[in-house]
Amino acid sequence: MDNGHLETKEKLLRMGTQVLTEKGFSSTGLDSILKEAGIPKGSFYHYFANKKAFGLAVIDNYNAYFCAKLDKWLLNDSRSPLDRLADFIADAKHGMERYRFKRGCLIGNLGQELAGVDETFRHPLEKVFLTWQTRVSRCLEEAQQQNEIAHHLNCQDLASFFWIGWEGAILRAKLAQSCDPLELFADQFFGMIKKNNPIENNRSENRESNSDYQRK
Image (cartoon, rainbow, N blue to C red; front, side, top):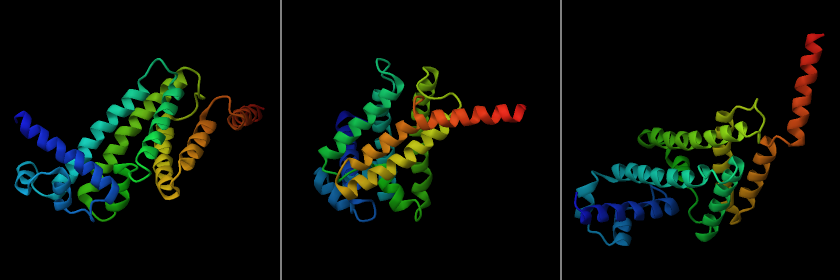
């Protein structure tokens, strides 16, 4: 595929990401995407068999972009692991404000819209979340190794919990037109897992007391 064809396909995917994130899949017609991109319909079918194939390609393209974004923040070894996760959250907040809370997360948006009605999209969307979850889990494992979080915590479960809560916070931020839900979730998440958290310290003390009692 020559550079001209690659540019056309990439333009379609970029425009598709923008429009589908803001308006959803079902309510978006191909004509509106092609009009925004300035590309004739015949060119579209050169790259994609139909709208569903295009939607799946947009998901793959967005996942590649977002994984690179996660790696930028979560693999930054000049920062502590929990600071890296906080940096990702801060960047996401700036993104929400920059687009005036109109976009949010394409994968979360499509998941809410399509997961219960179209099997074509359900598994690819879940696979994306699992990919992101793995990256956060590795970051949390590093935090554990550096003694930032307690060693008894299950990092895979924490990473799953992070994305479940984060996507809900993104939705509430769009509804409230405010980053407050994102900040609330982040504060509660970090407060829950940090090793010097008084609640976590009490839990550890209770576990130790129970162990002492059982030995008696």
